[in-house]
Amino acid sequence: GNSVTQMEGPVTLSEEAFLTINCTYTATGYPSLFWYVQYPGEGLQLLLKATKADDKGSNKGFEATYRKETTSFHLEKGSVQVSDSAVYFCALQRTNSNYQLIWGAGTKLIIKP
Amino acid sequence: DAGITQSPRHKVTETGTPVTLRCHQTENHRYMYWYRQDPGHGLRLIHYSYGVKDTDKGEVSDGYSVSRSKTEDFLLTLESATSSQTSVYFCAISEVGGGTEAFFGQGTRLTVV
Image (cartoon, rainbow over all chains, first blue to last red; front, side):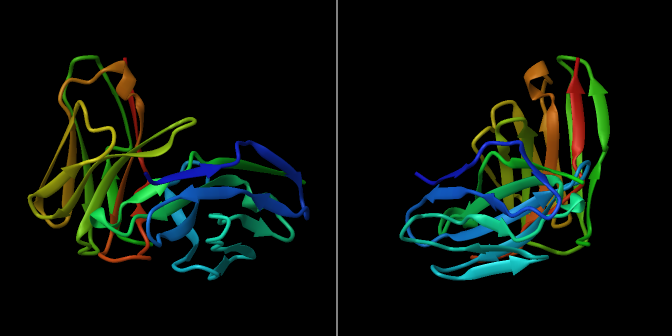
């Protein structure tokens, strides 16, 4: 079946550090892949996405590349800020059954000044 | 921001009572979803709708029912609330197709005592 596995958190970094949050998936077909971010007390919002193999999604300094050979979609940022502190969710979108989203468990990121 | 409103935002209820949560959208999106968010579980789909009066179950639908009599409103009902249904509930909307973004409401924090 379809599933998403994220690295467990919390991940604690100092400001300006390099960030990687790992995400791997299991899916049939060619799903679309997403990263969503949830700031404290808010709903989720789309951070970036990729819809086919080798696509790179990017937004606000974050990047992730759709790697079909390793079934991965790792989130990276070169220099994190305190304002990046949030929970990050990796998700895949099924290619059938009404395009449902399958979610990872979320990774809490804490950035210390 | 996408026009999606959840009500109430917070609710405390007693075990055994029925509870209804409302999701209202102004975007005319076809798909609407109810998720619950619990620590360590990410988001789990309860029910979703793909049109007026067209609904289907998600992975954790037991104890929940939904109704969609108008495009803009999607109601989630807990028939007889239990403590295991204490959670944060999110409504989401999306359009049809692969790679489409889901937009989330602010969430409803429900406590069953």
